[in-house]
Length: 284
Image (cartoon, rainbow, N blue to C red; front, top):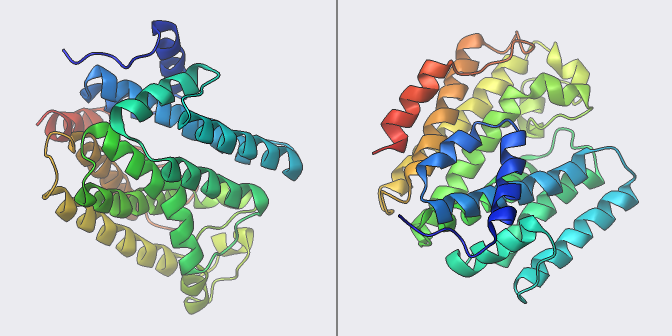
């Protein structure tokens, strides 16, 4: 069996608990990995969760900037061998084992800062793409290295799959985001369909389904690009990426089946389908 990361069991347990408490399917999905890679992914998730909480939770902009700046310092410290809590200590072990790149951690923080510094409403396509790259693509670039493939093809997977997953999240959370005053649908699509650039007004606009359908097509393209890029990668290393891609593609299909008029109906996959996806994509 592959050895654990070079971190104390107490730190490894603390990081795993962060993931378990989040109640995310990510926890089950990462069980397909060997111990050291799984522990690295838990630490990456915990890092993302902590910086996301800074951006999303109540607090002044000054407090959020201070919290994110502290994490920038912590990331810099990792590359000088410094760590000060369970998450950073396990991250340090992951950086050393899998050559995780500082710029990818910083890109994630940059993405959270975009959310912290302003309420995102109808970004143009270029801004939306930058946001997706920072909050999802950069996580993918960290993840593929933890999975075991640091090739340029693996980075292509991260580029496309990160966008596909984030666009699916955006389509799933339109109403929830609107309740927080946010609208992540692209400005160009909204304007073409005559949808107002207001989060609440957009929910009942006649043209909203056309906007959603158009964004879903873009997400499907990214899923296909990611799947093609995986063909050039280490097949074993890409098991978690295949599983995540298949799971989110299934969620996107369920959203399309539900339609774009019943946004309050939460879409999720039944347990049997999740198990089937794990068996098909996570084990082979």
